[in-house]
Image 1 (tube, rainbow, N blue to C red):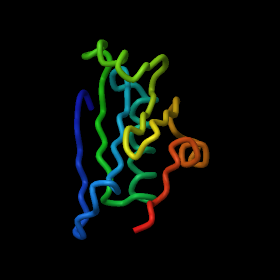
Image 2: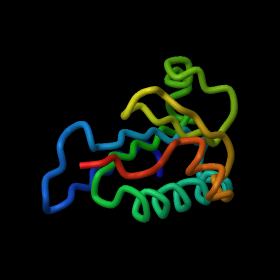
Image 3: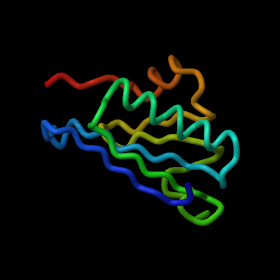
Image 4: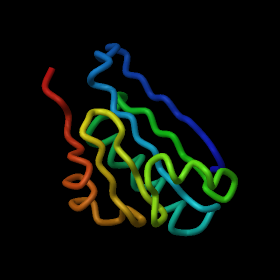
Length: 109
């Protein structure tokens, strides 16, 4: 899970503005980090299937990357696109909090 980027595209080739760009900041492969990644993937597949890019950044390997998104706690997910930037901290187990916090809903076509 160190530093990975997974891009999932749908067969219908969504417009660039419909692609969600998310970054998940973790510190190693702790139980919270693993749970946060699994939860985030599940929510993305439920709410914006095939229209998201997920980048996992392990701050144990790249601590300098925390400054760019002002990461103060981990795990933290940052929604870069669509704007505005939004953040949710924790293992992302509370689905309603994550959906509301990231405003994770499909954009109208």
